[in-house]
Image 1 (cartoon, rainbow, N blue to C red):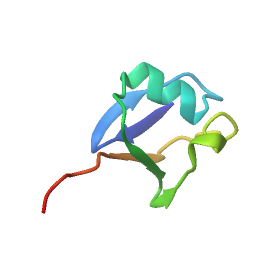
Image 2: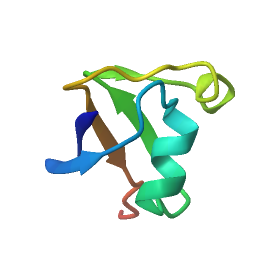
Image 3: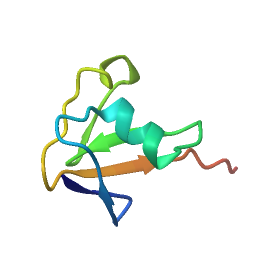
Length: 65
């Protein structure tokens, strides 16, 4: 299935969950994750099943003062 991660098209196996997508994308900690605009707690990544056309955004914290 095709999804987007941070605006880039990405190919995943059917029935993939969010944890599998993050591993395959080689996401680097720390980050927050949203699927279709909804933030997903890390504790729910294994049970968050993805669908064709889903959009994943990884947001890294920014330090500043």
